[in-house]
Every structure is written in C-alpha cells, then in structure tokens.
Image 1 (spheres, rainbow, N blue to C red):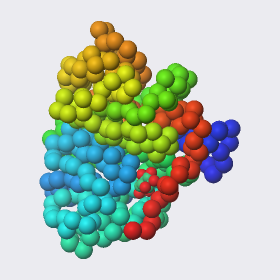
Image 2 (spheres, rainbow, N blue to C red):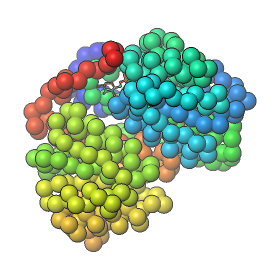
Image 3 (cartoon, protein in one colour):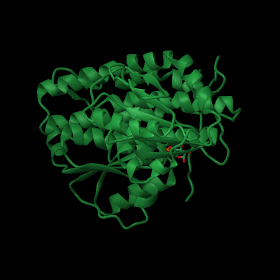
Image 4 (cartoon, rainbow, N blue to C red):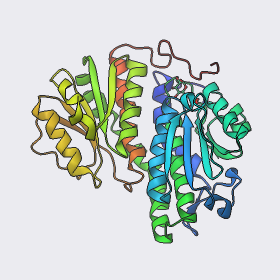
Length: 368
Ligand code: G6P
C-alpha cells in the first residue's frame, strides 16, 4: 500500500502526512539510552575509528545538499568538529582535496544521482572514506559507499522530496550524536539529545495536524511574484530548502538569503509586493533575527515567521506566524522545515500545479 496514493490528492500529500510513522520506524533500535548515543552499526566504524575523523563533509544534490548543510551545523554544534556541505555536482568537477581524516557523507534519496555517485567514486579513488545517508536499499550509492545509515523512509514517489529529507536530517542528528559522544559531548548532554530525537515523530505529527492554518496562510502568498526566505546559521539551510520546494512545485520565484546579509544589499528589494518567509527559532540569535524582521516590516514587507510559541513578535506590523513545537536548539531546524513543505504544497495546489510531477524535473537525475 506504500505505492498507492490512498485517500490523498497526490503522493506528496500522502508522503508529508506519513512522516511521523516513517520516522518512528527509522528510529527503532537506533537510540541507545544506556550510553546516551546512537547505534549506527551500518557505518562499520567502531567508536575508536569514529573518533579519528577530524572533519565531516556532506555532499549531495538539490534538497539533499541543503539537508547536508543543516546536518553540518548539527555536527559542529554537537561534536565540535568542523563540518560543511557542498553540492556534489560542483565537488566532482573541481579536483577536490581529499583528506584521510575527513568523513565524507553522501546524501541521496534515490542513491542513483549521477553527480553524487561520481563524487563518491572520486573520493574513494583518492583514498577518502565515504558513508551514505541513502533511502533506497541496494542502490548504487548505497552499494559503493564504505557503510552508511539507511533512511528507511519507504518509497518516495513525489518528485518533490519531503519525508526522505526529514529522514536525512534525522540521520544527521544520529550521526552528530554518535560523533559528539566519541568527542566531548557529556553523558548528560547526550541524554538530552536522545530525548530530543525521540520526541521528533510526535512533534512532526503536531505540525502536520496544523495543516489547515498553513493552507490559509498559503492563500495570502499564492499571488506573490517573488518571495524571500530568510534564516541565519541553523535557520539558513531551512530557508534554502523552503525556497527550493516552492520553486520546484509552484514555479514561483523565491530566493533564500541569510537574514544577517539582508542589510548588505537585498533589503533594497523589500516592498509590499515581495513577502518574506522568516525562520525565527527561539535560540541565542533571536534578538538579531527580530532586528532583521523590523528592517523588513518597516519597509512595508509582509512577513510570515516560522517560529516558536515563546517568541514575542509584538511591534512588528503585518506579521503572521506558524509556531512549531520546541525541541533542543540543535534539533529545532528539523522541525522548522516541515511547515515549509506544507506551505509550498498549498501554494502550488492553489495555483493548480501538477504536484507530483513538476515540469522539467525528474525524481532522480541519473545522467550527467
Ligand atoms: C533531483 C530532484 C531533487 C533531488 C535531487 C537529489 O534533482 O529533482 O528533488 O533533491 O535530484 O536526489 P537524490 O535522490 O540524490 O536525493
């Protein structure tokens, strides 16, 4: 029945709504409360080997690249080792420097994306160690990597990826926890993250239960010519993925920007015709984020804030909000992504787009 659309209008809707159940399945057996860590046997790395990596680099294409960026922030937060992400399509063509003490992570739903697969081979040719964060079992990338974490999201039919991305983000949370626990993350801190990860499926359920309100907000954005998606640090990859999703299925133009960089140029574009979707977590950057929102609303820009209930938005004119449940600050970006899936979906639905098969796109690009 995973291949049937069931009572849903399309696969994208079905796949967004099945996330709580698919996440529970993914997490089953992977959290080790006794040692406050993640059990990732598929990596084929024991704690001592895991500890030898001084750096992590995620590679993937499209949304998988943006989730890689989100994953890198979780790894830096929890393991305190340098981590970043790069588009596999660029990486493979620029004669990258492969370091033996870097753990490379290939991120792919299909496991067949040519750019990602060739990047894996390039890393291995130069002696690097690459593990996969892949959904399709037995796919080319899964087979060729030196171990990995299967996402267990189940089949994803909609071209526009939703549940697989959430699973990738949770996969990175597990990896960040495991890397943290072989570095400096204490038992107590590890337990805090274990509890946070365990809470994710129920919290995703709460967000999808709020779909009707997101559909209402989508109505107000569906006639915009162009939108900004802004966020900073942990929120920036979330903004990038939100803008990507909207472009893919609604064909509306959207641009993701760091909130911190707005004042260095694009603020000139803000007007009542250019709405902004802002990622505003209740974290240590809140005051600065609110400052950026003041800059936008003062210029007549409409803002939709994806935020937490405790965040006070008083004094900002024309601002709407979607509240997501609080988790731990390091894990909050995973949940902040979910309303953006629903938002893109409802805008595209209002515009009458072909949700599961957007024009010009393929589910997986297996040619160069
Ligand atoms: C294609 C799809 C994107 C997807 C990307 C990576 O370009 O249109 O939605 O994010 O491939 O796919 P993968 O299967 O490697 O995650």
